Length: 248
Image (tube, rainbow, N blue to C red; front, side, top):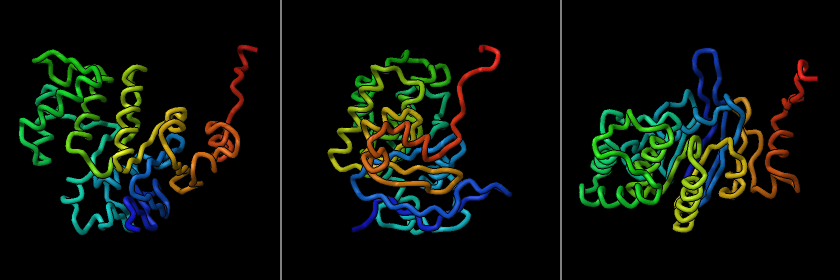
């Protein structure tokens, strides 16, 4: 079977720092994978390499059965990306930006506007007609970034902390959108520190620690009868007593 995502002995160094260390990981088509790890574990660097924003120091990355170096532009047209930094053109309005993204993916303005309108309505995104993205709240910017990632109906979707700064009502809508995408066969790779969301959405989990793959399996395999939080803390270690000396 052709993998939707495949990393083979991928390493990324920034000077003397090894952010990702000999990582091998394969994701089947249609899977919903949660990529977990502590801050600095290598999750965002891995996603940046998967989406072509950062080149690996060594190793091979393939998406949708094709090595990234063989067809970087063609592959980018087939994937959707919501990076943690969002990287929006903030002097445009939300509708202008989404239309611009639609043109990059070869959509007509009419199609892009219709899809954007539906996405904005579902996400309760109602900016002022002349308000530029720079003046949006953090949560509104996250919604625009998600709309841009979904606009072209990607076969493969990468989401880096999509629920950060999102209100509970919109969070539920996003969960429903992602569940619907999964049902239609979209492969999704998501990072999140909100483990309850990972438990609800993901059917597979990969845990990184110091750039290495620490464990990988289904939710049931990793939990081993406990909560995902307990299993995660036990795997990565390093938990500290939360009692403060000056409050004793």
